[in-house]
Image 1 (tube, protein in one colour):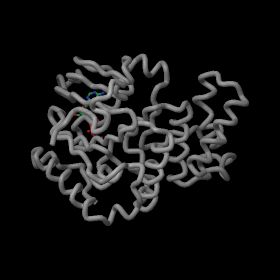
Image 2 (cartoon, helix red, strand yellow; image 1 turned 135 degrees about the vertical axis):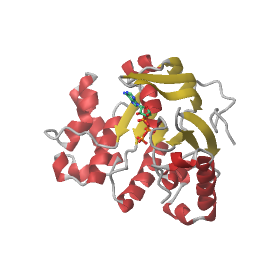
Image 3 (spheres, rainbow, N blue to C red; image 1 turned 90 degrees about the horizontal axis):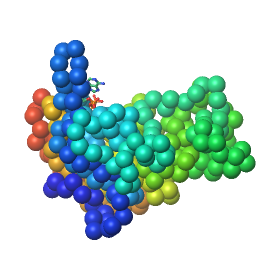
Length: 280
Ligand SMILES: Nc1ncnc2c1ncn2[C@@H]1O[C@H](COP(=O)(O)OP(=O)(O)OP(=O)(O)O)[C@@H](O)[C@H]1O
């Protein structure tokens, strides 16, 4: 079942959205060295949706941070669309969204979404047009002038996603973006994210603790094991194109079969390591 190459365009000559090769990450702490990741090889195709799942401390966030160039690997290489992760960050080739929406409270919805465009020096007319497009894309057209504290958690998260998309990145890096939402809002946001990813053609690397969330969203689910963090398995979802997934997929037999497949892959990891993964 393990395949480090993308499920789609495996024979394509187009550079992968993400290419992680022979990566180790060792942190030096006062208590000694912590090997967070070892022997990581992973390629994500353009437009592909890949989730990272695994017990607490297996290195999911560390791997995402290496792809985002927020930290550097100890050995190995990370490339984004064929350039170094560092170059890709400077060129703003990806958008990033974390569990906390991280909005600026003194800026409106439109002001928050415009921020990356302002930082890039986009002319104000172009900025305004793009912000209009983005608030519509995430369904917040009537809320452009509101401030973050006037929005629900789900709406704040949609603003964060719109901000991440402002520069039209072909890659989105998301670390538990829906972890703080109630279950109904979370399911709604999952469906919205698939729609937005399909509309924009962006590849997504998505960290989650939830098996159903990973199964619903992904083309492939990367199952990680802890101490040191490594890829234990990669499970390809046989649920049709992510772009076409509707809410009723969650009640489909094939959906439950895929949940079982991911759960079994996780249970291949040490039993004590299963902490921190939700099966709901
Ligand atoms: N800056 C750091 N300094 C030292 N150790 C770190 C640092 N960042 C992460 N680690 C360690 O690396 C390991 C992997 O951490 P990471 O946060 O990537 O795991 P995770 O799978 O995302 O966990 P969780 O599911 O709980 O968010 C852990 O043992 C953690 O303590």
